[in-house]
Image 1 (cartoon, rainbow, N blue to C red):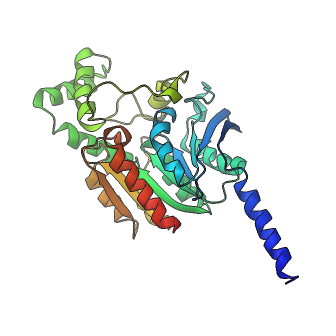
Image 2 (cartoon, one colour):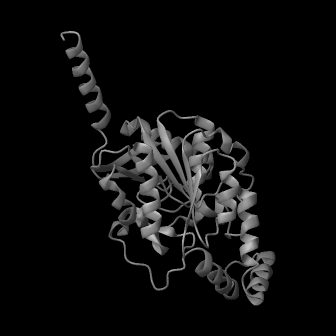
Image 3 (cartoon, rainbow, N blue to C red):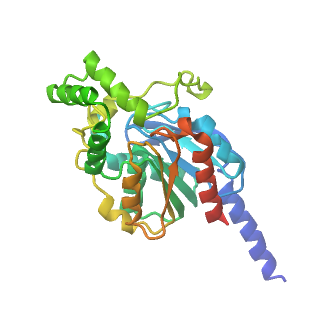
Length: 314
């Protein structure tokens, strides 16, 4: 008993030290190029969930109300990538490289003492997540959720052309015309891309609800988006032009969920192709939803995430 007691005490101290930092709070972490902002919500006892937002150049605040509903089960960690949201906004374009965004995840884990966690990467966030998993081979990752992910630029652009072909002929012709002319601000082109967005990005009618968490937060950083992706959703011309990780998906050994909308620009057919690369991975299709699943069908989307994570934690 005398030998067992010190072991028990050390175990209690160790568990306390691991969980001590995973409490509701917010702050900043220094990374290369500036500071990134983070926020932890929830007091659930499950393994924490780290959310990597879309973009490049977008922000996390829009998703805080929805994803926070998962915090009854586990701490949920939001952060704004450098150049977006609450984080610093440097203008040095050498910072807009994928490996540096991957380093942000490493910095967050170190600063917040995240020994174990689940990762959810949404859209471009899926790019950061897959690059992190493949290049860093990190320990302590319990699962990865790819939500409408960009995993292959060539596949993303191919899917965009398939979806454009399903629009009316006048809309198709307008998009093709002004893409070739590179006149992305033309009113006719903007109207045509709106037709694409209404069908494939967010299908829920009406204005977006005001999000209190976004008050005082800068809008999406179009400079970062244009530098890394390009001026249009349909064709990559920036630093992500040659990004391809489909062939590396098999290197991820953790449980994986691919989740996408029924009408998502990250097409369901593509998610099933990705699934073939990771034995045992799952696919969830969110009904009546475009790329913005959290807006279009939050009930089914969040339930699919909760069920997946709960099953793994058990």
